Amino acid sequence: MERKTQPSIIRIARENGEETRAEPLNLGVRVRELRKAKNWTLEQAAKHAGLARSTLSKIENGQMSPTYEALKKLAEGLQISVPQLFTPPLREQVNGRMDITKSGEGNSHATTTYEHELLAVSLVKKQMLPYRARVRARSPEEFDGWVRHDGEEFLYVLTGGVRLYTEFYEPVDMRRGDSAYYDASMGHNVISTSPEDAMILWVTSLN
Image (cartoon, rainbow, N blue to C red; front, side, top):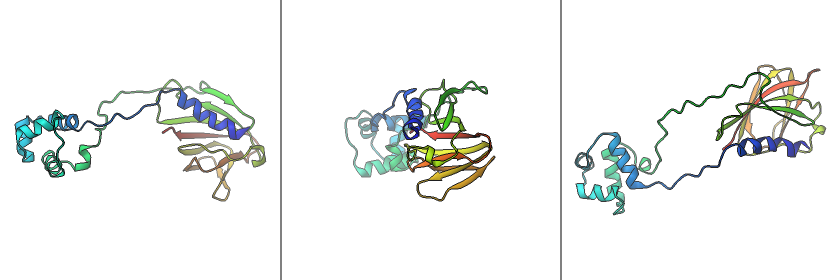
């Protein structure tokens, strides 16, 4: 039934990529990276931070745990905030990933209420799951309860008209060009209100 089917679409997408776990941040390595990003020697960085060169060297090599006062001096010297010392750097390298899905070439998964077409299926470890759906349902009674899953979701009506039912809001009628953004853990269902099956685009976060 639908309550079981739609979450499987989300699971299928998640299973296409491996789970990633954040590695514990090494303060010494982080300080060294910040220093080298400024092209500073140990002496230069220590001077900016008001610390002894030997102290900075021990911090970078994990030979001592700095006091909060030393952390404040380090942050000020590196022109960042103390929390940024413990925040992994954003990825600066552009990997140029791209996937083109021609019309009708997505990965199809049909149910009694929707016909999903997963898009960008060749990309793994995606942050978002885009998929097009043909809405077959004409009544909320066709669903076996609410659809709900982790993440946030964006809905955009491509053709026809739909009615969006949600657990905490009144039903909303939507036409071509209308969109909705909502918490996907809130129960939700969509039916077509037009004579033909409506077409919608869904984009669901995967993290």
